[in-house]
Length: 208
Figure 1 (cartoon, one colour):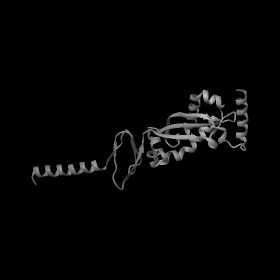
Figure 2 (cartoon, helix red, strand yellow):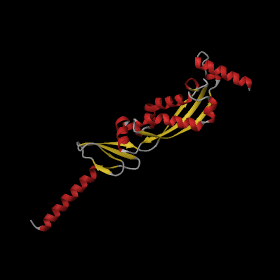
Figure 3 (cartoon, one colour):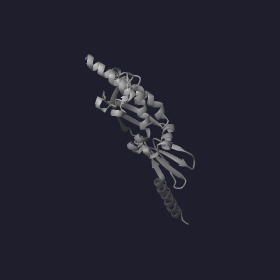
Figure 4 (cartoon, one colour):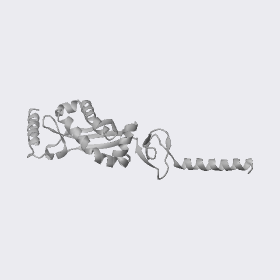
């Protein structure tokens, strides 16, 4: 076989290998990280790419974009303050996956495709966000909450940091979008918390 024939064969083989590598090559983007499992162990790709061979590897994609989740508490579900008054609150939580290997792996394991679906992610951590709002509100009077919104938001954020970290998430910011006293008409007088709060509120209104 001539040298030219060998050169042609080598070029064909190289082209086939390059085509196969290109078809199996998976790239991460600014918005999506990759977690490759299977042959060779786990590999997290936040910047760059990796080869993923069918049957030998599995690729999980993790959304790295910030997701917004709204929480509204009003009426019977409103927050109870330190002075036993009820307040209607609206808040926006902005969360994203922490950009490091451990967090991306944890998010892939615990959240899966929920990181691409804000509604499903919210349904998973909604209770945690509400619990943080309730816990912080219970430590502040209604006047303190109104006058120190920044402090309220900071404490809510601090309360959620470790909890969300278990899911590979970080809380980018929290915004208090609504804050007002819960109307009397929405309260149940037979509720002990409401009874105390309504009496105090009636006294404040009478003095005013």
